[in-house]
Length: 444
Image (cartoon, rainbow, N blue to C red; front, side, top):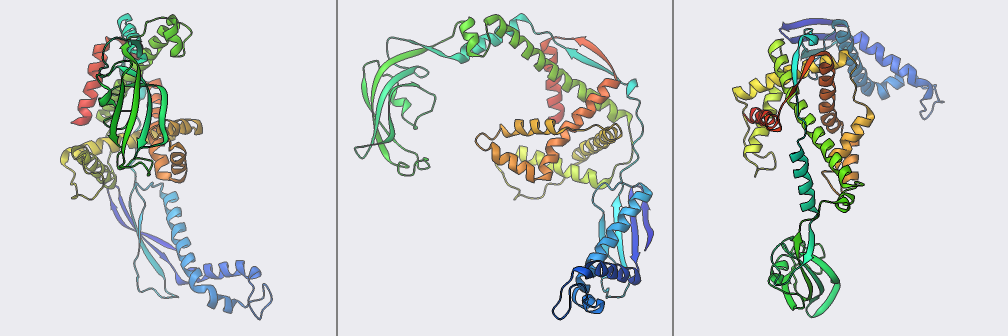
């Protein structure tokens, strides 16, 4: 087997691999010899089939296997010897396409290797961490929001308005016949909640306690129950109470509705939640500042294939954000701009740097962390969590998409531990401005 270099230009590498016909034939004979003891064939005892007959019967298929194994082995040996790490899967092509049995096999292998990543003195990096202490007014505002969300209702005189709650008995009929699931007693319905069939709630606006009213509606064509879909229906309604929304009182009873033992305990929980939210936002700002410093301080050659792929992905994503009505990929080809390429270069450079740092320092994403990430993502698909879990388990690319940001954040945390970080007390408004600046940069 012979490997000769054909290209050495920057990060681009090209090689020609030659496997002699004798080497290939020897590998085929070796495979046949291994299999011979277990092969049975009509007219011969098990393990006694002549080698010549085996070669005639199985040789063509084994030649293909031997050829693939030889090429793969040559590639692996070359990469181990040179230390090259291809940026993407090497491209391998047969050179002598008119190959016939007995000839040498000649293939070309081309790839872009990952660059040498320079060492970075992370201890020399200085960062500021924005620290916000929750103000009493912020805690009170959050408490008031919880009280409003509790949405109690109190009896009122007069007609029902949108936002009010009516307590009703109803009986639904189609073609004069009551249908299953179309009746209830003492049902609390908030007008404007759109929880009933379109047109139902609007007809109860203006009703008073004690009124009786027939509500005439039509079930939607796409209604879940096929026997009702598109049918006209009449609901005989008796309005028993009309209630207006009332803000819940801030007391221990309200706190218990939200899982706290007392109002003071709920106040403490809210304060801790605000601290966590502020800390998360401050970390995002500090992470961006760190990446900006690394982007300015570290330079090295980038594999063009990675930059091209990233620029294409950025251009495609931004195009869809600007054209939200187009859901599929049946659209004109999106050409990356210079701005897209500039952003792609930054992402590739920082990605390679963080990946190298994580690998050198054995940064790992644990199974527990992956499981938590999958669970968080699955919550976005209520009722389909199991299908989502199965999809992730069977899809390596999807797993990598979830693992990549976890790995990056763990590497960033590793750098934070080495960098010089100074706390800086700021207001909530200052932190909000810093977060908005991050969003503006991402949108630019």
